[in-house]
Image (cartoon, rainbow, N blue to C red):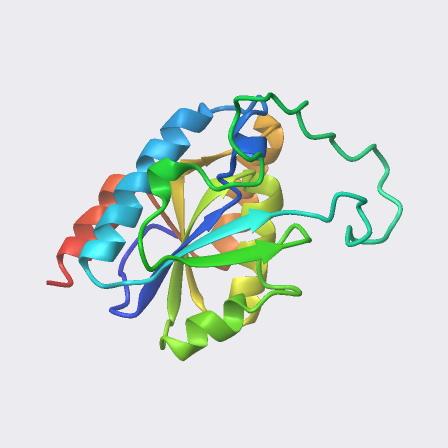
Length: 196
């Protein structure tokens, strides 16, 4: 569904824009574009006094808190640490701001096993705008859960990317239209400005 409105109580929820994830090859958009557009949105949300939630995925060094199960394929290994590199689990500085809500997840989606829903409800949030990596994994899982929790869901289509172009396309064309509204960063910014 095309973008029609932004509630006055909307939060920006950013999925996994941390160094470890940003170091992986992605498509169809480069990670730098996703970060730049997300940074634009984050600045606008803060300017309007709306919450910005930065979600990251992290596990204990021994992997003891990884979700159980038997995935078909191997879990991707993080890139090898570099002595001068920043903490791989740290959210990139381009999108961080004072007062942002930080949520650490240990699953694909940002709702299960976290306090995300509580943080949003305490602030009276009725709608979320989603950005991040990967479209078909963390973003889609969070969008599905947000829909199930009763939030209006908006997806910033040019502020997300994936590790698989077919999976990205499937999320954008088949899944997201059933969960909420889709719009570009520019369209979302225009609606935000109309809030006054």
